[in-house]
Length: 518
Image: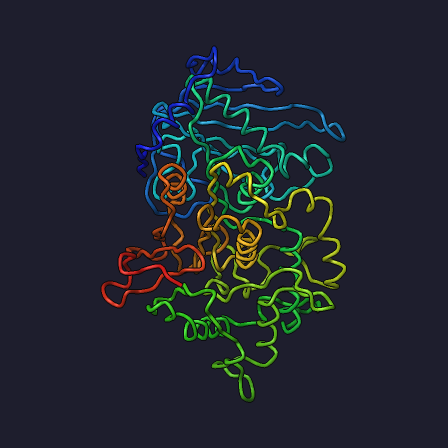
């Protein structure tokens, strides 16, 4: 990953990197004594780390390039330690990696799920085959103010812990992290970036909305903008499939048997027949997402059910599941889903038409009353932490901020339609400046939630794209994507509503032979 500067930015960069009065560069070990005015900070560890290979994440797929990490100073600390509700201890944990060869930039690595764990601050996501740390960024991460694993939501019982998770912790860690960077190097970062997906995508959007001057460039992937409503939508999908599913001995619907593997294959074949070639290349990827007009009714059996068609009940179930939940008056409570190849994925996070994507429980299960459940979804937690409604980003783009969104079209957890609708409202509500001058959205066909898919190109470098846009004034006209499931292939991801069009000549597996147009 390479970054460069245009000549026009040199004077500005000099002004932005002037040392803090009285601050000189500090040794790594010296950061153990760091304090921040207005914050209760305790540094637990400050130690040099030698260059070496980056450890693979526990659940990372085998294969792929071996990423290397540079020599860096690793700082682990706590902010605002306290005893909370029911005597439970709380603090905002964070980790900061300060590379020896610093490129002058600050990088916040977004979280995931309900957080609760401080992930290693490498900035490895959406940085191509490298990482933000390897490129010289100072990288920070946080647990957002509580300890827990998986989707343990018990911390919501404590007011401050809940508010920290929803929006406060990232802001606090940003302020403290930037001061640590300045203390270490003797000068402030000249530019700051936030990159995250899912919960990290929601955090990214939150920073653009509530703290618009903290970051120069923000990348939000598959943002978890309305979790209560997306869970309601997943329940509605389960309900639609369960209605026609066979029952076990106890009478419980076997949701994943509502459609057989053959039935799901029919859906994808019908989808590809209708939409695959709209981009000029029949390659198993639907890039013309907005123009795709597939209707599963074309697969309906004229008579009795056979292996070559769907029953009328199955067609109705698929249509209902993909349409998203509606209230009794017809109001669309949550957007439906795009028809895409990954809706039948069985590996990794299951596709929408495979059945419940996570084990049934209080958050998933079956929808009983959409009206009542929609009312419950709009609770205090969602009002404080959801990011779907706020579109006034005038202060963010007003100071030169740049904002990239991306979303897997086959994401079963959060609908890509939700992100598209938000992006379109950004254009309406910030109309005095053309949207593509400061924000762009990229849709990734076949990709599930944040990454993965059985046939997709889910490896791309959004970090380089946002840096070049912010510092070189070069907006991303395309971002080339590759993927482990499609070796030796590449395609361009295009800024919505444009999509990749095959030129008609050359290798259809090479991004060079595609252009971006509507």
